[in-house]
Image 1 (cartoon, rainbow, N blue to C red):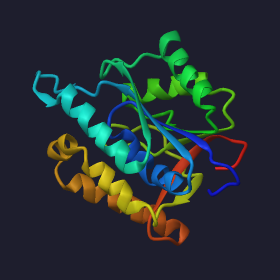
Image 2: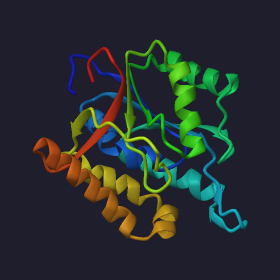
Image 3: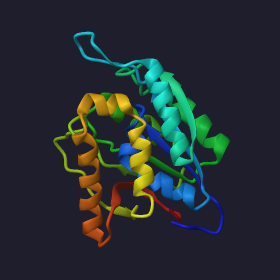
Image 4: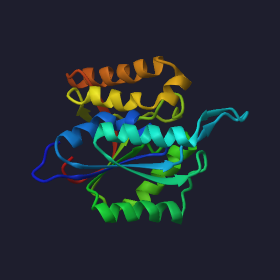
Length: 218
């Protein structure tokens, strides 16, 4: 992962906390290695149950994503789309394209293409269109149960995050509304997945990805 020059890395999530769950350890490792990290959140992250009960206010989402990005050592960008209404459109593609060009992005982390959460899927559709000239695009594992799919995730590329796992969990801990929503077992499950992926490659903790494109150094 360490290279001769700092890489410009864009980690994309539909909502506040998606990046931390899916690739927070890898993002933290990039930051430790001196790379330039940008976290792009597509939505305001206001979230409510279909019965109208508010699960996360817009203010909570803003504060939590800001605090988490600071822990990871990343610059935060939010496009402000409505939660559950992320488009796959000229607007979303051009907004991401502008960020890619502005920061000369070398590597993108994004949701898995077959994630069944509509915001996650459309986010990655927009990323793929906007990032067609980016050399490296890795898709992180879907969250359970939001991303459960009829297709199987292919764990093709692993990153050992043993040295950055605590940073990942500290950043994830800033999303207090999500912990309140899912309970402490949510954090236990995130750790269990990282341990399992680490075991698969002979390390303590790891994150794994499906490769969309891998033409350069990660």
